[in-house]
Image 1 (spheres, rainbow, N blue to C red):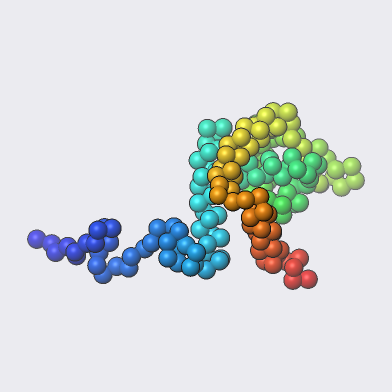
Image 2 (tube, rainbow, N blue to C red):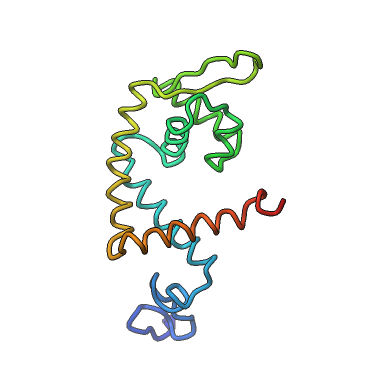
Length: 170
């Protein structure tokens, strides 16, 4: 007969620490900003991945397609920096998007090894379907915030990104 440790109402044994739900204790407003950013990022990523599954697009593909649309003619190297992905990952994503007909590549006029990347009409339609899904998620993130509060959040997130970037250190 095995002895089982008594459990609390949350299912934790009495000898293990209680882990609060997101939004509670150190996982809430009392938590460290870096941890809260990571927690929010993970939750957002999961929601976005689930939202994109029915259109057959991964979150990194959506990000790359979004950056190509925002910066037509962008190179792979610049795309990797913009999307915050490794050049190798971007190369695979770009090849898959090109194979699916979502993007085209053309050689740079001067530098033969550099490829300019553009979104095709099929890619634009795919991006619109993805945007429809992501738009609802973004709206839910903003529920309960005034436009002024939204601007404060956006300004703070930009600040946090700039403080952590290499450009801020130079």
